[in-house]
Amino acid sequence: MGTAGRAVQDTGTAGAGRARELAERRQLLRLWRLPGLDRFLGLWQASRLAEMRAIVASLPLSAWMTTEITPLTPHPSDPLLAGLRP
Image (tube, rainbow, N blue to C red; front, side, top):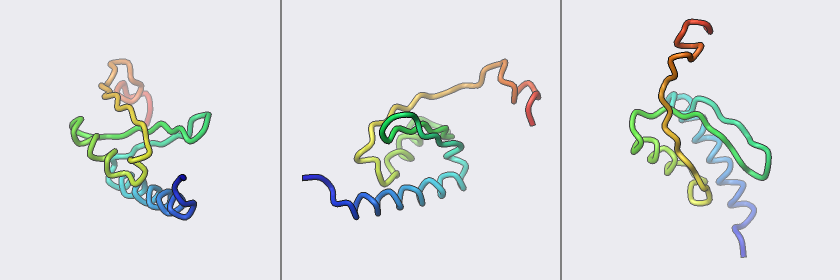
């Protein structure tokens, strides 16, 4: 027996609202849908790994998600850092 359709829909709606909140707080910078069934890639901003884990845990769908967090650092040839992009 799976989760009721209405519960899935309500959780998805709550997830969209939470994504908007995190975007307003500049913690969620970008979000893409990847090819395949319900796969996503997000660009997030957090000051510490523990903060990023807390953000992921705050997502309404977190109980059903498999996540991988990869910390990034600036690259010296990044066009934005080199002043090549607005």
